[in-house]
Structures are given as C-alpha cells and as structure tokens.
Image 1 (spheres, rainbow, N blue to C red):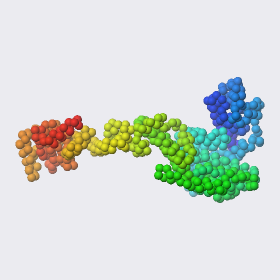
Image 2 (image 1 turned 180 degrees about the vertical axis):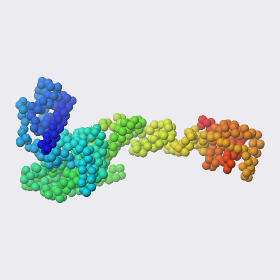
Image 3 (image 1 turned 90 degrees about the vertical axis):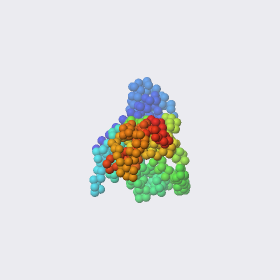
Image 4 (image 1 turned 120 degrees about the horizontal axis):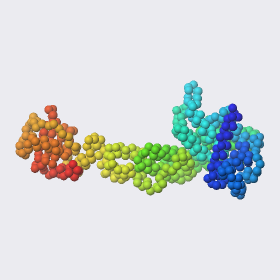
Length: 568
C-alpha cells in the first residue's frame, strides 16, 4: 500500500513537471531558467538524461535538430545548474540508494501522512464531529485532500513555487464546485484561505520532518528556530533561538495547532551542533528587533506595531479577494454597468489604500495573496473613471448601491445613473433632499406621480399650504345642510356666486388636482372652471363650499398657475 501511494504521488509529480517544462519551452522558444530548474528536479526523481532529452524533444515537435540547438544554447547560459545533464548522451541517472535528497523527501512524506500518503497537510477540512471525541472525514474530504496532497508534493519537490501552486489548487477546487471548506468545529473558510493555510502548514511540517531526520543523522538533539518579522507575539518569544527537541515541544508548542509548525506558522527549525554551528541570530540582535517591532506607527488615526500591521495587511488582502469575487458575480449576474464599475473602483481604492498602508508601515506588499484567485484584472484600466464616483461613494459602495436600488425602484429614471446618484448624494444636498421627499411621497401615494409632488413643493415655496396634492379621485358627494353652525353654507355660497348643482359636480369631475386635508377627511378639488371643497360626515361626503373661476382670489390664481406649470 505504501509503495503504491509513493508511486502514485511521484507519477503525478513527474507528469506535472513534464507538462510545465513543455509549456515553458514552447512559449519562450528556449530552455528557460525555470525550465532548467524543473528538469533538475525531474532528474532527482530518478530519471535519466535520456528522459530529459525526450521532454525537450516533445516541446519542439520531435525535431532532433531543434533539440540540439536548444541544448547548445542553454549550455552557454550562466543560469544552467548542471551542464552534464545536457552533455551526457547516455542514459545517466542517480540510483535511489545514492539519491539522498529523494530519500529525504520520500521519508518526510511518509512520516507526515498514512500508508496511502493521504492528508499530507494534516488538514481537518470536511471532517465531522461524531461525538465522544470521534471525528470522521466526509466524502468531500477525499476531493479536498487529494488536491492538497498533490500540491504539497509538488511544492516539496522544489519544481514548483508556492504561489503557482496556490493558484493551481484554488482553480481546481473552484472548478469542481468547492467554494468553502467546513471544519468539525463549525468553522468555515473560503477555499483560497483554507488552501493557503493548509499548504503553508503542511510544507512547514514536511520541512520539520526533514530537519529532524537530519538532526538524528548528525547526532544532535539541538535545533535553531529561524526568525521572521511580524511574528505573532507568542511565537516571537521563542523564534531565533536554540532549543532541544523536547523544548521545541514544551516551549515552542511543536505538534500543536497554535505552536511551531502549526496553523499558518512560517517558522521552521534546523539542526544545531554545539561547538560547531554558529547562531544566525544573537540575543542582542533579537532584543533589538523586538524593540523595533514593538514601536507603533500611525496611519489614518490608528497606531500599529509590526505584528498588528501584518495582520491589518492580511485583512486588507482578504477584503480585496472578496471584492474581486463580487465584481465577477456582478458581471455574471448581468448587473448594471455602473454598478460593476463602482465595484471595480472600490477594489482600486482598496489597492491604493493597501499600497499606502504597506509603504507607511515599511512592509513589502504581498499582492500574490490577492491574485491567486485567477480572476485576472479587476481594477479599472483607466483610474480616471473613478472620478465619476465620489470618494465617499467608493468607500461605502455596498450601502450606496442598495440605497440606489431602492430609490431607482420608486423613482425610476429620475435618479439617473449610479454615478449621478452618488454625485447628488454627496455633492448636492438640496437635490438629494428632494429625492428623499419624492421617494417618501410616492411610497405613500403610489397612484400619484412626480408632477403632483413638484406642484406641492412649489406651493410650499410660495407659502401656500392647502394640503397634500394628489390626482383627483371622484367621490359621490351630496349638496346637503351640514347641521352645524351654518347648516346652509354651501347653498348660500351657490346662491351668492350664481353656481348651479351641475357646476358644483363639474368642478369635481373636471378637477386637475385634489388637495387632501385633515388626514383625508376634507378634499379640495381644483379645476379651470372652479373649486369645490367636500368633507366626510356620518352620512357620507358632503359639499362644504364652492367658488367659480370668477371668484378666484390671488392665492387661487397662483394655485392654478403652479398646476399648469407642473403639467397638470
């Protein structure tokens, strides 16, 4: 079983190296430095110079003449690591018994996994807690760990770089439908985060296995832990120092999730021979680094030490990957082009902020962490397009897009484009207040329209308050005494103004607008020929008063003019 597992992993590795070398040679028309390095790693897997020549010949379509030309050219290059590989014409290769590097890799893979070389990275993804401390892998774990196992084998071989493999494994996972990785704890991660952590941790643990084997071969029980900037505080306490193997476990937490070679740990350790080895980091140097990294630097009103700054970087990178995904989903969902552009502009603003923060904190940018999603270019090709969106809108894109959609649903084309809406919101408060009022009006009176709201706003400017302006709705009203202080008011007005019953009803029937008063209990109908006011009584709607156009006062004339200008 073990032999089959090793053979399966190495066959996969050899095939991937061959494909990548052929791709590189065909693209460049020569044996590149990277291809030369991969061919060296290919030979370490037990292949001969004859096998190497077969790969090169395949890349040039089987031409021996072209193969010889590439060999002659590559031998002249300074980057060639072993000219013998191109000069030997026999089937030279290094036997496994003499191939110490391959032995180390094989033994490390075995120590790090089970007899089938499954779950080399020790990932707990897609594991379910069955209770009583029993955890089992779900069927999805076989797919997930299969991708990770292949990737860490390729990484450990040295034939492929870390970021290339991150992109490769994320692409494979998402193509197979995986978007998130679930754990028995109930925690869940996006595949890019989970894959990166698993590969980083798995490779660190493999390196640890090799270091331990080297230490045992050298007869030493001491190991020096390496140092890197921005280490988490609990790791900073022991990094850069020399420990016995037992101290690596007891003090550095080797073998535990939060300790040395645990989750996301970037440290490793190397054999240290007392009296022969020299420390890479003195106690004085480590103390000086601790002092420098504890110093805080201000950015946008907040202060960060080195560790806090690196954590801020990671959060910014995660936010940018999420924004890149959002842009893609908007495109696939057929979103409005302005909305897509705003999402792209927000991403560009995030990139600019990331650059400024990294420079201020004196930290290298790690954009490869952003780009391994393989989504290509997302930021606008021309930064000038960001000028169509206010800065505040780019910063609050998610909230503003939702607000725009709500306004658009009620006001339609009145709000214009997304960029226009943003400009008005952040640069024209008077117009935005108008939008807010119109939206509220139309939500409350959906059968009305902008003309009636505009008429009401104009009347307010003129100091005329006659109620809410609405489209006229015909009512069955009666010319009857009201039974109050002046029960015959309507009849008296009709007599003194020479208005007939038919005239009264015509004013309502031909009304251009209706003013709703007293919470809808009174309504004033306005027509070119005259106006009438009705009130709601127990017996129904009763005409309260009436006047014809010949009785219009200055205020009535202004009302008619406003309604006309509003298109009513």
